[in-house]
Length: 203
Image (cartoon, rainbow, N blue to C red; front, side, top):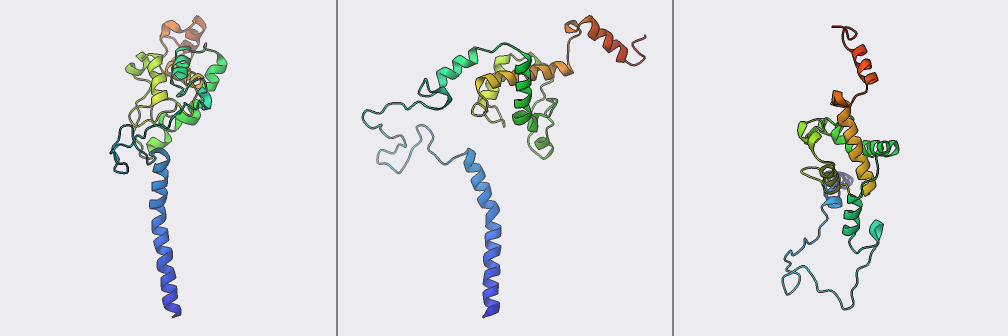
């Protein structure tokens, strides 16, 4: 009887252990892909076959969150996107700190797309140091941060508009760190480059 009980306990523990990873995986995906009806999706739960339900009488929008002035926040966010804050050292520092938190794991400290998660098998994002992304308008970078693209998720919930612009400014600084046109350098900068060149800048 004792051996049977032990065997049952062993099987129960083994079953729970094997079920835990699947449960964690399911819970982790539900945090992002929550079980819900998409707009205009069909549903067999209701007689009319649609998931959208008629609104009760006298229903009004309930504003809240960072964009309480509107029901959805869309118009406020678009207005904030159009009004870019001036470039300052504080903005660059803010962009650097936000980049380190949200961007660096995939895009790497230098922006070449070889971040730690990429080295562990995540798809390789494009390098910021390509001609295409150097020529891309700032508004495109802002839009990608806001809405995501490809494997990249949207970061509008984590980064308010001012922080998104700060990240864009820091991305431009990263690009200049790897590909600064000589015409944008001062005479002192050029002399320092000549002094550090092989041969001490001598022909």
